[in-house]
Amino acid sequence: MMKKIRLTKLDVSTALLTLGSVIPGAAVYGRLPEKIATHFNINNQPDGWSGKAFAVFGIPLIMTAMHLLVCLLSNSDERLGQSHKVNTVVRFIVPVMAFTVETIMVLYALGRLTNIGTVTLCLLAVLMIVLGNYMPKSRPNKFFGVRTPKTLSDEAVWNKVHRFTGYVMMIAGIVLMILALMDLFIPALIVMTVAILIPLIYTAVI
Image (cartoon, rainbow, N blue to C red; front, side, top):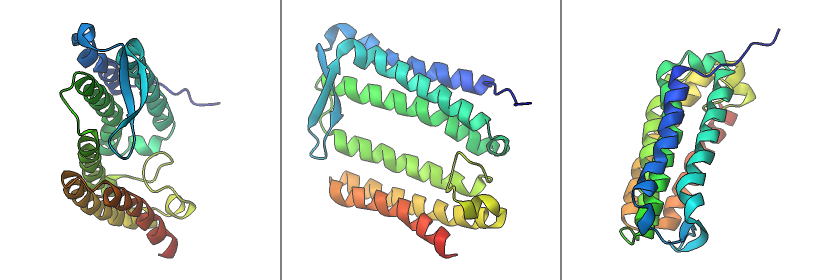
């Protein structure tokens, strides 16, 4: 008999927090232009726009749906639930992202923020440092971490890989923060790519 997957109180609470990301835009709705920049290129210039209503209300709704999907998928693997701290961090990623995205879009639309690239990269750097700190605390699962046949089949390999990955992500996050503050966007993107590739290569050779 298939196990019934349920949403926990933490799932519902963080989903409501995600939905609450409408607050920044709703608070200044009357002052916002009819078209809002919702995507930026590598040169820090907007290259995608959405209507005001979609930007303020539609995107938080989509993010909330994504969050609930993430919760349901992670709840289907009991092993992730056994890593309580990691499970909690995973739950708060989408709400934080939603508030961040909405706040950045609103501030840019009001002319209060211009350097989107630096702000975005700094936030990604913080995220990498946080995830790097929690990587070694995770247990084998099919949702979070470096998930390969080798790591999923051997808990000792999983632990070794995730200790190494944690160090890589934390170091990469610090370097990324420095590069972001120096407005060195191309090197920053290279650092993020390398930080993803190194753990995969390490997993393959150990």
